Image (tube, rainbow, N blue to C red):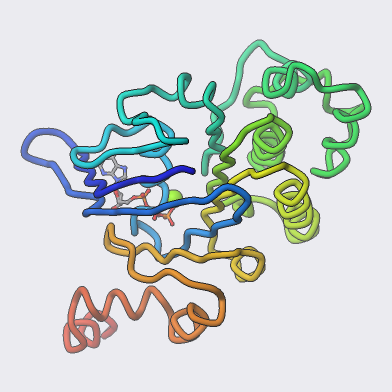
Length: 251
Ligand SMILES: Nc1ncnc2c1ncn2[C@@H]1O[C@H](COP(=O)(O)OP(=O)(O)OP(=O)(O)O)[C@@H](O)[C@H]1O
Ligand SMILES: [Mg+2]
């Protein structure tokens, strides 16, 4: 099980420091699919980066399968079986798409590689020999990065807005791939950061994060009223107060 306990995160330089996360505690159980949602700037990616060891928390601890992993870096966490598909994936100069996928799973067979390429809607003949660098479009790289996390034998798959930059035609395919991979992988914890109602509907548990705090947890039934009234509007209301919100909406 992955647990984060009383996590605080402060980012920025000297006098420009900001407290981004405040006392966040979450448990993620094996076999469950979680969706973290909430307004832009609420702290979702920051939570993912703390889990992955990209950001060092200013308070709190992270535990994985009973061990304290707070001091481990991204490579060490990835070796333990925690992998992250970035909201904006980095590019890799000098390696082909085929090599990129093999790095994620060295035992991958040709058939599996063709299957995963077809599942993300990229024709293997056209893409496997291409370079995984800036010559790929944003949506192509996004699909490849999601594929690399899903085909690795990871215990925790953390996907940051998998739908971002993926076209409408590819969305249903992506949703099916992510949910099917989760079901097939034994005891994998899948954590998806998403604004998409379809992903929210597929979740065992939804976590709403805003203003750097966990505001709500539950299933779609519990969270739906929040979505319908507009999560962003609701939290802005709390943050600014109703009168001020009204004033900010004046032209
Ligand atoms: N390196 C950084 N230095 C300073 N502030 C940062 C840094 N990274 C993120 N922030 C700030 O932390 C807050 C949370 O950002 P984060 O990226 O976690 O939000 P998010 O919930 O993922 O938003 P989105 O839905 O837009 O992706 C934002 O106000 C952001 O500006
Ligand atoms: Mg984000």
